[in-house]
Image (tube, rainbow, N blue to C red; front, side, top):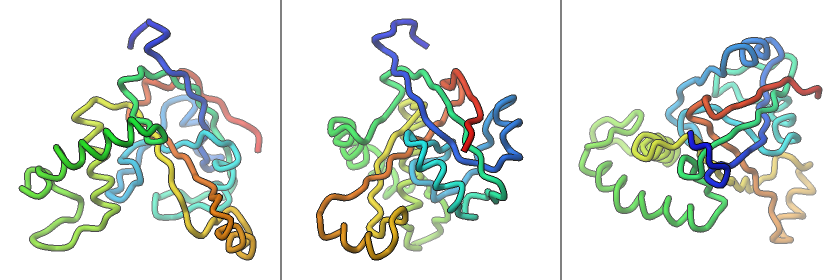
Length: 195
C-alpha cells in the first residue's frame, strides 16, 4: 500500500453482528459468507452510519446466515488507496461503473465467458445475481478492495409505515449507504462499540 497520504483515503464504518461473534472478529477477522445475491459482491458489509448498523442488529435477515440474539457493533477504521476503491456515490465513479458494465462485463456475460450464479441454459437470471457477479468481476479485474454504494428503499423500513408514505410525497428520500470490503488488510483498527 502506498505511503503517500494523498493517495490514501481513511474511512470509519460500522458492522452489526451478534455479540458472540465479536471476539473472533476482533482477534482474527470477519468471515465472509458467499452469496450470489449480495448487493455489492461477496465481501464484508459495513455502514458509515452507526445508527444503520444498530438498526440492522435489530432487523437482520437470515438470508446472509446471521442469527442475532444479542446485537453488537464493531467500529472499523480503514485505510485504502484511492485506485482500490469504487465509490458509487460519486458521479464519476458511477459513470465508470456503467461504462465498464456496457463495454466489458455485459459482452462477456452474453457470450458465456462469465458465468452468473445459478445460470443454467437459457434460464432468466435475477438482477441481484447479475449485480453481484458484476461487482465480483470488478473486484478481480481492477483489484478493488472496497465498493461503496447507495441504495434507495422505496418503503423506508427505518420509518413507521404511515410516515414513510407521507415522506414519499416530499421527494426527499433517505438513501442508505453500504460498503463492501473485499480485502480485510485495509482494516487498521477494529473495536467493539456499546449499543
